[in-house]
Length: 321
DNA sequence: ATGGTTTTTACTGCGTC
DNA sequence: GACGCGGTAAAAACCAT
Image (cartoon, rainbow, N blue to C red; front, top):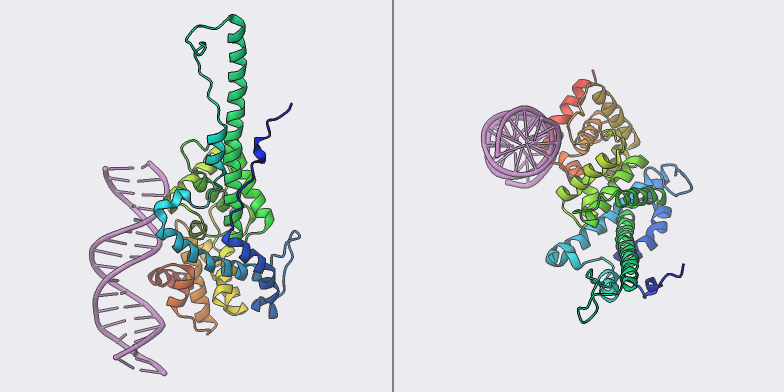
C-alpha cells in the first residue's frame, strides 16, 4: 500500500544539550578517577562499571540541574521546551477534515455511491489520523526517554527497556489524560529498576520535565496496568552510586552494605526512603571504619536531611548486634 | 478527606579543634 | 568562636484507606 509519505518532512534538528555531554562520555570513563583503584566491569557489551559508570552518571547529573534551573526560570513556557516541533507543524498541515454529513458543498444529499465512497474515505482518514497521532506520540516519547537516559548515564539496554515499557503503555491506551513527559519519566524509572541499576525517583525527576507527583502517579499507574512485578527498592542497590560520589574507601562501602543487609533483616527498611537509609548506612560505616565523613556531606550528596541520617544510623548500628 | 507514618525544618545544648 | 554532633518539637510530605 502506497503510504502518503508525509513523514519525510525535514525534522528540525534541535541541538540537544546532551550532545556535547555524551561526546565527552567515553573520555570520562577512560579517565575515571575510580579506575585507578577499581576494576572496570563490562556487562552486556556496555562500558558499565558499577562504580565508574556511576561516577560518570554523576557528572552528567551535575549538568542536569544546571539547565534544569535554566528551564525552571522559563517554566511558564515549559510546554514549548524540548518537544520536537514537528508535532504541531505537522498536524496543522496534514490533518484532514471530512464532514460526517453526507452532503455536498451545496447541502444536497449525496448519491448512494458517493455516500459509500465518503464512508470509505472516513474510515481510512481515521486510520491514518490515529496512526499518525500515536506515532507522533511515540516519537516524542522516545526522544524524551533518550534524553533522560543519557542525562542519567544509563546504558543502551536500559533505554531499550524504557522504550518497550512506553510502547506497551501506548498500545494499552494508558496515555489518555496523561502527559507524555510523565509517562516517559515513569518508564525510565521503571526501566532502571528492572535493569537492576536503579536511580532514585528524585534523580529521574530532576532530569525530567514534570513534577514529582505527576511522575510517581504515572509510575504507579504504569505498574498497575501493565502488571509489572516490582518489588520494593532494595537500598543496597544504591550503595555503590552514593559511595562513589562520596569517594569513600572500599572498606567503608562494604561495611555500609553489611549494615544494610542486617538492617534489612530487621525490617528497618519498611516504608522508608531507601536513599535515606543508604545515607545513614554510609555514615554509620564511615564511623566504624574511622573514616570521617560528616553528616552534612552525605546529606548533601544523597539529598536527604541530616536528621534522617541521625535517626537511622543509630538503628543500623544497633541492629548490627 | 483522613489518619498514621516518615521526612524535613528550625532550634537547642554539648564537646572539640 | 566555628564546627560537627545528638536531640526535641512541630510542620510538611507521603501513603493507604
